[in-house]
Length: 254
Image (cartoon, rainbow, N blue to C red; front, side, top):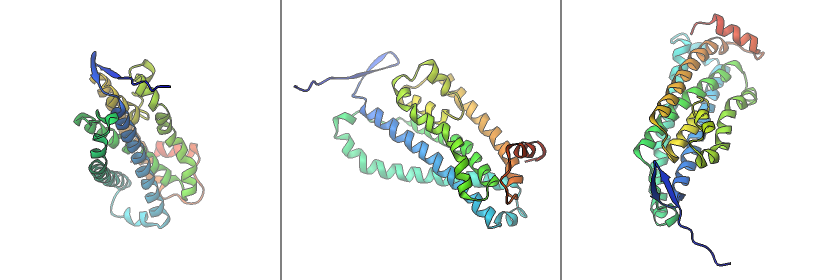
């Protein structure tokens, strides 16, 4: 019944790194949850903003001064700026309060956030936010009530939920082929590739390819969503069907 004290070590890039791993685990969990909640929360904020302006007919007034693409782009980048500002404030306050006590705990003695991790967080937050928020803006444009939007948004949130469920698997085996290729998929990469970077930095070509695919997908999604947004935000009453939305993509010019 006597407790057994075990000294654990980590192997990074072929070298032994001392430490319990508790700090690295805490870093992954906190930053991954922050990334997930931020993308989700601010995406929903964009949807609610579109619904509010649509139901109050403010959009009809705004369209007299700006195009639909300008309105959607301004909304996305405006909310993104607010989100990044709030995250910076929360991080500074949390670090000032929690880090002194964590530093005194031996289990978290290896807690250290590298500058590259912060850069990766900013890149994946911005691209992931733009990708998902554009889809949320479309939901706000094609629906008339928040209840309708909540019924559809599950399809958008599903990749983020799957990414969270795979978090422990990625932390245990960040270099397995399945994890590597899943982290390349744009709808999973904001979380999975970021977790891989924190746990064990993958080769640069994998990071570059993941960011490139995510950026291209985000750009394409913004173009398609702008076309749907242009027509959908002035449609009231019946929710459009999938064939009708496909027609909007064909005939609308963003």
